[in-house]
Image (cartoon, rainbow, N blue to C red):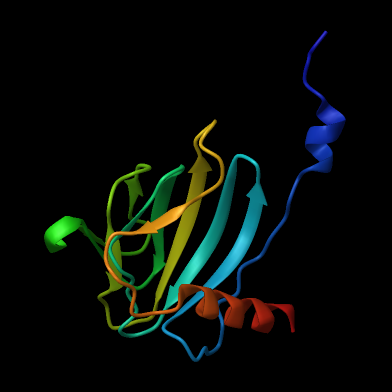
Length: 148
């Protein structure tokens, strides 16, 4: 006999669809796709000039894959970790400092897959350099647009 609760697992299935915002008044919008105690998925949409600051995540590994546009990822002291186009990406382990920017002529759409580390709690984003962009306002703006 299996110790897996199939009914509970099947009740937790999540479906989603992605549609990029037609416009947004910030440099970044975040479209949440799925979430549970083990991970989250989202798409980050960045317009021209979209970037973030040097930071790290204490409790999650993050896989990034470009869906549209081009992204350049950096480490400390602006060391380039890689430049990626559609269907290419990078894995950033928990604790690794990084930042990224949109570097192509098109807006950037990045698939983000977070995998939580057991025993480390939820995702904790820690700035390693000052922010010049209010990430929460950008995310909140898009969440409101998504709901309408």
